[in-house]
Image (cartoon, rainbow over all chains, first blue to last red):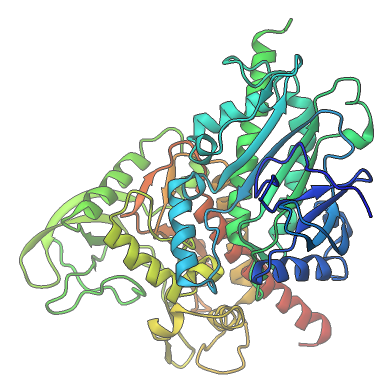
Length: 286
Length: 286
């Protein structure tokens, strides 16, 4: 049987520890996500199963999704014994020192068919977080600086950021050390130029796709902070979509909720990049 | 004192009649909208006042707003005596036989600072209508056919349209007569080619503007159905934004709610146009 361990770089969602059911990884680059035993589990499994066989999904769009290797029953992280897991791509497995941010897209995390109770809970969270204001909220973030300092802001802090806060967090995310007040943004253009390109490619698809509505789905941005590793293609900055427990049939309409939030995120990334070139212009020797 | 009358082509909002306060028009192309005596009135007045003096609004964007001529106290339509009115451009005054559709944009019509009571009411309407599903709802529509038949679907019918219903309504909107089951779409490309261009121009602005969030605001589409008049520039198909009682400060974020709905509408307009060229391709003699 494969030896599984707790992932080190997970930033959002249930985290495995003693007594808690969470995802596991193996040494071959696979991510084992416990299948939730309600509608969410069957929904996410159905999504992954249909995604890779649906001829309507353009090939260039499939790269935004973690690859899928079926389900497997393995020992659960909570010590409760065997439990079915989705076997997915471990997105960070090729990275030596990955910086990761999880951004839940959309100002609304519930869909019209949800139960009243679920809608009430989601709506409250959407109102208390930045979701309704900005069209997204940062669910988690993790980055390790040059002398091994971990920067992992508390989830409660990340939930309800203002526009200025998001700008600062994104600037710190592409800095050598996120813990300092004045971010150096050394990875700024190396990360956000390719990431912006990917987000724009995704946006183009969301302007026309009428297959899925992605509720409560996240954009994961990952890049390599280890300068020696950074040149490798396998460790380049990527955008991935994750968490499909609340994907529903689009019934012929575009996913305006996801698209609006994605456009908002794109505006922030553009503004961070503009800020970098402003600095370069005003300090030509910098 | 100017002689005011009840507008003939109004499709949404309070309609003036005996005992009911509604907008009035004069013969010089002005539209008198009663100033609501609560926050909504002062908000809409503040919006119009700031709009035309705000240097951040690009000149090409100002054309999407009705021109504004201050306020004037005139006899109210409900017979209650003098009442302050916003004096706006009467958008349809240059048209002989205008076809008009009012589309309320955004899946959410309430903003975060609204009262709990207002949020509850709006949310219910957003859920009962097509707003949450499609990102917009059609608030009203009016079109008069070649032998003077009026086509003005009931508001309750328009509120909650499916994707197929919206396609059919938009196709009927650009047909000589909306009352027939098989729309001829004779005005299809003459209307939707320029309208699409305008909507895309608006979209481009909404992707970057962080000045206003437009809640419960409508896109009004107007075109000339009188073939003799249609060639005049003053009677060409236009897009206008109307209803600014619920516009709030964007606080630095784009209006992802409006933008998402606008992109959804754009997709519908594109699909109607594609449908037209498909027909032309399959019936080259048609």
